[in-house]
Amino acid sequence: MNALPDAPVDASFLLRWLDTSATVLDREANRLTLLDSPIGDADHGTNMRRGFIAARTAVGQEPPDTPGGVLTAIGRHLISTVGGASGPLYGTLLRRAGKQLGDEPAVGAERLRDALRAGVDGVAQLGGAAAGDKTMLDALLPALDAMDTALAGGGSTTEVLDAAAKAAAEGAEATTPLRARKGRASYLGDRSIGHQDPGATSSALLVAALADTAREASA
Amino acid sequence: MTGTATQQEPVDPGGTTAGTNPMVGVVLVSHSAAAANAVAELAKALTGGGVDVPVAPAGGGPDGGLGTSSDLIAAAARSVDRGVGVAILADLGSAVLTVKALLADDELPAGTRLVDAPFLEGAVAAVVTSSTGAAIDAVEAAAGEAYTYRKL
Image (cartoon, rainbow over all chains, first blue to last red; front, top):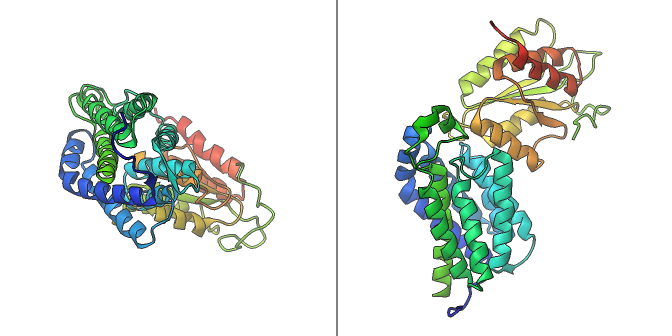
């Protein structure tokens, strides 16, 4: 099953992921803001673009030499530069994940999955949300489950992250019929139904960027 | 985290009246700088004369527009920390989440806590209580009790 050489997830890998993510969020900012207009305050794209571009610049100037260090540094910059709820939420996700990786110089897909699981648990705790509340968790939790399944099947890092990206995208799409139970969108009640959740959408983009980074590394 | 461990060691006597205990700091976090400033001003005005309670607004986002700035929150908490705890009140969404994230990572002064209270009424109760030299537990309780103040 593992035909391609497996790229280790090291500091360089996550710096490339950050670069890709900033580029993708810059490109998709308008779409995210459009999704945020009917059910939020129409700032998600702007906030995510500002946060990731600032993080790319700041972390690129003094890049940490471990994958945990890179995630922790990005998380810190997101908390201070995003300005919306996605700042503390993504910031917590990445800092918890970074902390979980500790000082290890490089990890494989299984350790990455464990770290992301810790980060997503932190997000759930901070925001008090659960699956089905029409939040970023509706993309992230299916992604983690898909990683579990792919890892159990002996998949390579690329295969595991591809599975995560696919599940996150499907999870984000599946938020459309849901009624929001967290955040500003929850004030809208049934009127939040019929719109794809912007946070789940940005989460799916970030997981897709992980898969793209792995694919390019093993190509 | 009970927040009163440093009660015996006032860091900075500023913001206290001579001869009284150091006061609990109050930070008001709003999406709007104007709202945070106005609520801080109102709460201080309702406290009455002679007592300069350490209150700091932290309103608006990193770009100066509507939003939440972790840097402003951290700076505000440091500015009102007299060594006996800092009570933070926040309005909505990202304001609450940002304070929680900063607390979880120990990025605010020791003894800082997020207080579960209505923003304006809670701010008035917190600042008035702090002005009496009460400990942070009493400041927190007074702010929270503002939820029970019915208008009809």
